[in-house]
Image (cartoon, rainbow, N blue to C red; front, side):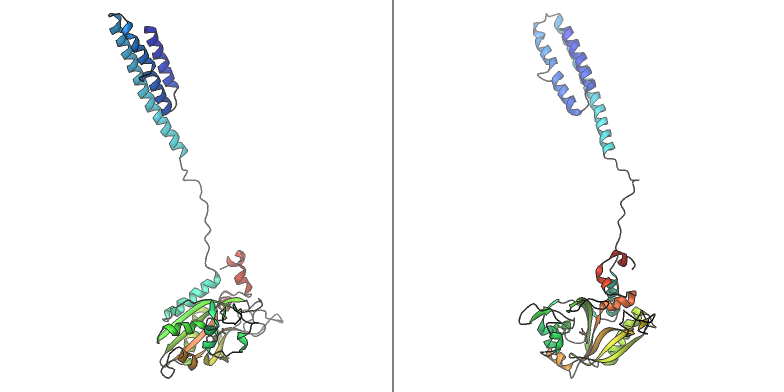
Length: 347
Ligand code: PHE
């Protein structure tokens, strides 16, 4: 029996020394000290011993148990520390490794100019509004005093959705004049930027989709002078105090009188040619048409429930891409929509 206890002691201690995980330690505890363990099995045989031997063996068994328990505790501490160490090493973060650089984009040049224009008009007290791109012919044409049969209504110019030509992709932002006047009483100043669509072949200055910014001001005693003042102050803010522009008489069914405003071509500086060749940016005109404008037609005011005897107003609609081309010195409109990063990175 003494030999048995000695064997248990030696084997238990060496197996505990060899253990590497808390789970293994627990297994060994059950094996050596558990109710069905080796030590218990030996103690069960104590009954067979003589009265003199029993206390001696009992004492020895207790000291073996104590020794194994002590070893178990110390191995627990050691293995626990080793496990923690390994975990910390595995989870270590090297803060000195360089991170992955995030390349920051920036606004599209056209949006930059849109933002500038909005800021200027918001500063003048204008309210910025948004409206539908799929529009009723009623708003896009009829209520703007554009009669049946007008060339702009033609199927070769306008994208229609329905056979009866009643629903279309808006060809201008001017229907926003009607939509706004339906819901607001003068005085007001409104600005409505947005996409418009026309069946145009794409070239250096045309695209079947482009952006306009509509402006509308209605109050008592509004004159053409107010219109010119607003547009000139906007142009000077964007293109500089020395920028050249001109107003030409024009015709729009929804304004009377009407005009167009051009800016001097930034490419040929108004000469219409570069190195003896016709300037491709302005097609030799020397000027780039930027916007149409005029005094809101009394019929349009009236159809929106505004008394034209009391109120007057002006409206304008400008091409945002053309503004951006002048502002950013871009000589081909298609570059604005190509989204070539080599182009966009220049701004
Ligand atoms: N909507 C016109 C166009 O697209 C421009 C315009 C707007 C003219 C407002 C007068 C008043 O050409």
